[in-house]
Length: 396
Image 1 (tube, one colour):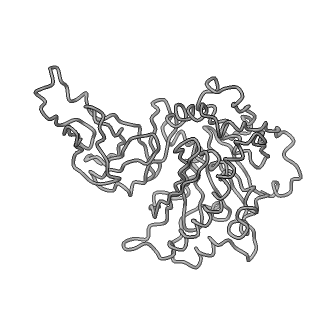
Image 2: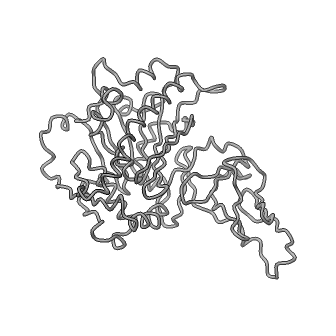
Image 3: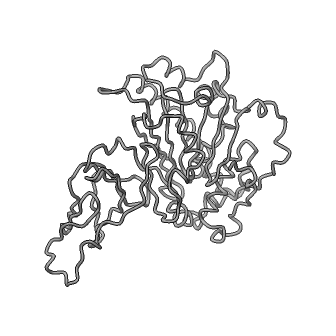
């Protein structure tokens, strides 16, 4: 951090980054390539274990273009299934959440147990032999846990979740993540491409302009250290200003009744935020950790989910300090999202020739390199590709 604060230029071996093509945010073909090749090839956050505490609990996933649900099986396992009946594809789960000892399709009454096995077929006599119910269970999706966080992936080839996370998983051991519980999930919508929202949270170059009274007083963006990991993941560690003037978030935490969380030596002293590729940001503070997720609804419409996690407060209502803290986060999000719809219009303009990124903004460029790798460079029109420049800066 001291080196970053003192430098007068980028490191001498750091390459100039070619502009990112505007079409990556506006082109129909590129958006369809992402839908076809990106989202099904990665691990995606689905829920926290506390959202399905008991056998029979189910939860309809809110992941766009993935009709699926989680269910807590009678055997204690959490599983993910496509939300389609094996008969004619009707949905089994329509409520956002609930509890049931079995899942019955309300269209033709085919019934499945909590392990996804087909256990009853109405008028089974009408199906010619051989009719084997054991081959007609629900179609499973890979489902694994990171602490009490549940992730899903449609890929059969991807590495196990904790191996795919790599160094991020190792670093999170110090945070006692099993002791965190979900507090609230807030949703925000913005009329822009999902990558514009993602890009905004991969750097702190913007904080003096966007957050002059909220975030900027407590962070020194010029000392930020960016780390690139395999599989597109990154980390940002930013020094805090040692002045009496503090951010609103820290003042709220100190004045409120929110119990502190375990953050480890570095994250307790500095601002640390990880990016789990492709769409998850995990900032932390004294009393809370957030999961920020950026979901494409259409090419130019994005849903931003912010899941707030805190230390277990035991029985009863959550501490009163959470109300002010969540309101403050609404302010932060409003600041961050305020320009993005304008920016979407700007990238459509003939006057915009492409993203020009600095050394401080290299996490953005690396994320786009990883997107191209997930899609497969050969699928991408040459004019929309990212020229790989950062491989030698990846920390193995």
